[in-house]
Image (tube, rainbow, N blue to C red):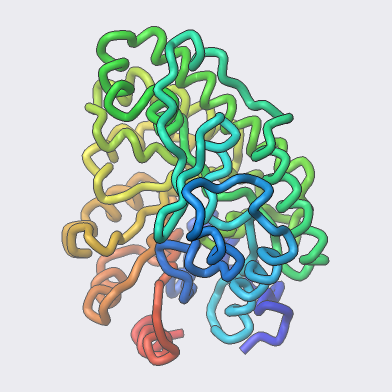
Length: 360
């Protein structure tokens, strides 16, 4: 086992470079994590929030959540795998971007969500990245504090934030946003472009103040180190779009985002596989990240989609829990080049079993 702080041994960088280049390799890049689908539960500092309906910026105690972040990263000292581990502001526990867009953040039992705003078109089209917004200020404050706390021992990154189609649904309402695409395609396109620029600007502004780690960038949610500028792209709301509407209204924005960041990746769920052809048409998307959702289709049904991504010459990151048979299927069916498996586990025994199957 590596003895570097948090398990972040510099020798691990080579496997990440192999992943991004899709170079020849005998096995995938593999990591294990005990962090579940709902990271809000991983933060002791958030337990006091259960007594409130809404989260406000002042409720986030910087020092308290710093301690929680470090505890999460420390799993790298107990797990022997390929991962570089780091932190981002509250990981995915707090949706900063909805707050920055003026949404109230509702506290739920397992996570925090931005409430729909149901704005008029005039109000929605006035939205921009307000750097005076308290949530924007808290986002930067926490990112800066994490970078100081790290002292170069672990990387710090952007959080997992919603994409342009998700922001459109947040501002206009999920149901109304679908009607907008049909009834007001020109206004929808204008709004989606503005929201794409909000995501691009937010990502660039954060990275302009974060230190690189081992000369590279990072995404903390997936422990994904990258040799060049990185952005996490997401379009969960397109799960109810038609391919025609996606191509006409959202695909150009995703292409713009991908072109602005060398090491971009698109986060997907099984519910979006019917749009996979359209996503793959964006040649600038470097990597696809797909969740093996707990309530999603079996791995056997997902393998053909995974192969489509690999056959298109893209790197593929799969995150989820897998049985021994499912893990064997992935290793047997998929090309190890450009493949990363982020395996969610509950015990050291599960790690040992998976390591044996993978041949680590």
